[in-house]
Amino acid sequence: MSLIAMNPSELARKVIQKEPLFILDVRNEDAFRDWKVEGENIQYLNVPYFDLLDGVEEIVDQLPKHQPILVVCAKEGSSILVGEMLSEEGFNASYLAGGMKAWSEHLELIKVADLREGGELYQFVRLGKGCLSYMVLSGNEAAIIDATRMTDVYVTFAKEKGVSISHVFDTHLHADHISGGRMIAEETGATYWFPPKDAEDVTFNYKPIEDNTHLQVGASRIDIQSLETPGHTIGSMSFIIDEVYLLTGDILFIDSIGRPDLAGKAEDWVGDLRHSLYKTYQALSPDLIVMPAHFMIIDELNDDGSVAEKLGVLMERNHGLNVDDEREFRSMVTDHLPPQPNAYREIRETNLGKKSPSLEDQREMEIGPNRCAVR
Image 1 (tube, helix red, strand yellow):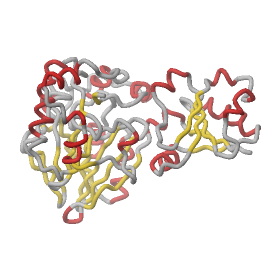
Image 2 (image 1 turned 30 degrees about the vertical axis):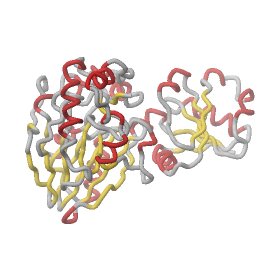
Image 3 (image 1 turned 135 degrees about the horizontal axis):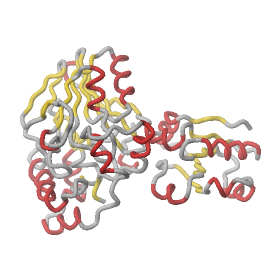
Image 4 (image 1 turned 135 degrees about the vertical axis):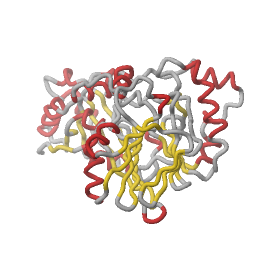
């Protein structure tokens, strides 16, 4: 059999549609344990490439005979070599084009809703990194929230829809991935909005997002209404779109809550985090649909691949919203945190405009899973 390439878009559809898939991951064991392609019906075998240099004969009994096998490595080179060996042995093998680096960068576009007066809301799902970003289309305008550094995806989609990007927002100073908001604004002439309390050390111009700001985008209004929601960062903001959709940034996720320690101020910010979750959000309509800036695990995806749930449902099911004892809450978000994101200090400095790493350095800085949540 001949070896074929599977691109990240094809893999994304298989993950979202929960198709059975067998993955032979030939990265080192520590890299595999830290981060892999997640999927409900995926089976895995991890055998480092260097253990297969002499051939795949020793693992053929561990591989499915009548099921396609996807070989995965960091950049694709090793997976091609192993995939060719498997093909020579008669297996139906493919390799992930671009490897895990390409998987980390893929954005899956999902239409979430039709808004009032003909507007549309789209979610960009970064399956390999857990990042979520948004585009509001209305009339001939578009607004983007929490864009990743893969800016061409947003700009190209706006052109395809025949709209101009007029506003770009970041809900907070990101620490796990490099924001594309400022770059999109510079390329398109859009206004770049940023929380002023997170902007103390920025080196660029921005328009401050403030409480009770109301912004019209075409026929749909993005309301930033009394929703300063500090805790993950001191400046974190939440947005309400069309009085229906609540964009919570990295404060509230579907299955967890934001961590307060990525600026080294967990003890200082834990009170802000609790107030945002237990006061600000509790005062909102339970029918608002929460749409966060990240997801933690693949199970948080809905059947269509989107990540969204009603606030009232999260108030009942999300453990982070149901810790009555304040001391227990403080312990939960300060004493038992997961490892910090890869290169988070460098990412913060890049998003502040203090560093300008090369594209390859940016890719390396972002490698690994999302770690913005309390687990």
